[in-house]
Image (cartoon, rainbow, N blue to C red; front, side):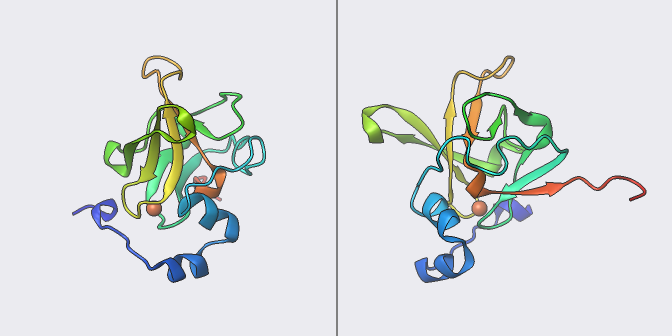
Length: 139
Ligand code: FE
């Protein structure tokens, strides 16, 4: 069983203790951070993006692109199984919600307007992510 296949389940109280208020609002209450406010939106460093709730690897910096939408945007998850997608009919429109497959945390939404060849834009809240910079050889 891969690391990401083990589900993480915590009580609401435990999540509140573990997460910052903003992380809790986004990850556990399906909140959305204001556009252009997240610390990782403009991040261009090489590394990996992990779930801020459970640490699962979600995205690689190779898949990050400048969408201009105000949130970190990726063309593809690090592994297909890392995220789950759910129909979201809130706000009166059909969107596809993206959650962490391991802990169920809300990450953001995926839209069909990304760059080719995949044509997808995973629009992800910075608050849902923890960035790990790639180790530079010799440093
Ligand atoms: Fe997670």
